Length: 532
Ligand code: FAD
Ligand code: SIN
Image (tube, rainbow, N blue to C red; front, side, top):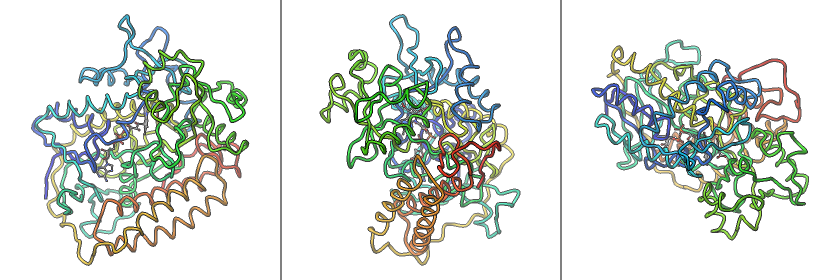
């Protein structure tokens, strides 16, 4: 058993930023970060394009960034939250610069500002095409400076602990559901440990692995959202899964390698099999339209021409500049025989980002007491029906700061709950056939990709739900009788995520942002958040 004042689940930008902030302000408080893999194995590490922020008020303005975010969000953003994130963003980005994160500069010392889809100005700060790697590096180094932060790698959090574990009936209408900590599988010892905490931050990242093709690493299995759904927290807007338009098309490679949108910001052009630059036919903003528009246009071109990819043409770009801004992409393409100066890059959309998640307020508080949510697992109202490119890292920084303020104000009033029982593992055995788990995972990803992709309709959603029901039943049976493994728990969580995405999609009888249903192609006049 472990006791910690503050527990953080996840070591990406959200978890680490929060932990550092608390550690600086409250050197007497213990902070424990649990992560199911190596510290830096996070979605954060793979972020490419950069971080959207207004730090040049001559050309750019908060109003423009707000406006761009609202347009991309297609009527579903919370305007107050958008204003808050955009205006607080510059201070938060300056903080991580002070902690050592480096962003590219021009020869005269000003920041280089890139452009991505949906942005009316150049405002993306970046570190070449490996911005996330640089941010994660700086944050891990900063976190290691504090004696009161302990990072435990390879600890898989199974469930958050609430009154339910003390034997009380907890339903969605229970008014005071409270988090007392978590049960976690220590993968180093294979024991399930009880960890008691006064406050817990869920910063467990995305859900991309629920689809067959995704830019997200293997850790992105929606564990936090699934756990909170089981604990009866409010989960919202899960139907808005963002597909990145340009993942590198490589048969059998998973996750897919991303070709950042910043390449189009610097002049890359999408072409179909016939060589036609098709984006102007779909939107006046052409290749720099918001992501939902570009991904749908690519999907439509692929279906029309019967291909599994389109091309990103960079041949007209200045190749020296390309190599200097995108060295990682250049090298990756080279490694598979593509010289971007001569050949077009085959690309296809891939599941990339979860716009919905654990409903969190302006201080990152979930609907469960003493439990905060931050980063990709949270739904704060910033992204609405479609996230504006490079707003995710910014959101994580702003909300990590806000969560830290609220936790700091409350922590003295909260005590540990010592009545929580240990984990009960009786009556379980090692699963006899691992294939049952791996096969079900493949099925799950296939169902989501085939029936719940970029373009949806009612029949497909119903099919998906029927199949998910069966997988759910089979996996729950296995879960009840098996000793726990990360694979089994991730499968179980992904099934819950699939269920939430389909349920949200079935509720939404309209097409808006990332959710496009051919049975309801219009936008409804009713602005509605789907809360499950
Ligand atoms: P993550 O960084 O994903 O961290 C999640 C953490 O939770 C990990 O440490 C993981 O081990 C831990 N965890 C999860 N489940 C458990 C569990 N059960 N037990 C214990 N630990 C657990 N956004 C931008 O704004 N700009 C970009 O340029 C950009 N580019 C991107 C490129 C790629 C390829 C990808 C995949 C995403 C990109 N994004 C970008 C999105 C952005 O990177 C993510 O949304 C953001 O980094 C999420 O940060 P996070 O801290 O919420 O989660
Ligand atoms: C990219 O670099 O294209 C990804 C940016 C993002 O996901 O915001």
